[in-house]
Length: 137
Image 1 (tube, one colour):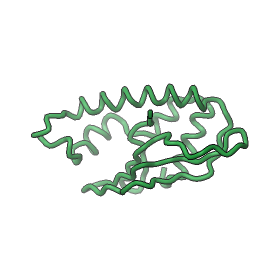
Image 2 (tube, helix red, strand yellow):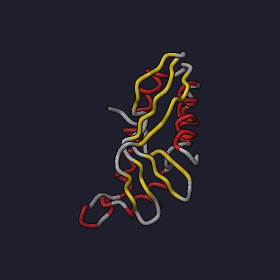
Image 3 (tube, helix red, strand yellow):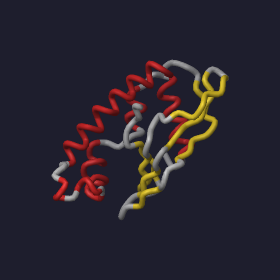
Image 4 (cartoon, one colour):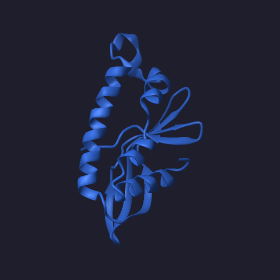
C-alpha cells in the first residue's frame, strides 16, 4: 500500500470479510521485521540483549490477540473509511520511517464510528506502508 487511506481501506475490507490472510498481508512479515526493520531499532543494540526472534514472538502474540478482538467487534460488518491518520511523531531511521499513534475513522453500517486504533504504528519503506501489528488496548 502506498497511502495510509489505502492501507486503512484494506484493513476495513479484511475485517468486513473476516479475512485473516488479507490482514496478514498488510503487516510486516517475520523476515521484514527480523532482517530489515529490527536491526535499526534501539532494542537491537547488543547491550539490550533482546534478540529479534524474541521481539517477533511478542509482536506475533499481541497481533493474534488483537485480530481476535477486532474480528469479534467489527468482523462481517459493512465498514467504510472516513479517514486514517497518524497523529504521533514520525520516527526516522536509516532505511525507513515509522508513523505512530495511528487511528482510523469509519462508518459502520452507515453510522459514524469514533476514531479507533486498529493498528498503532505503520512502517514506511521504499514508498510502501506496512502495519507493525494490529493493536489491542
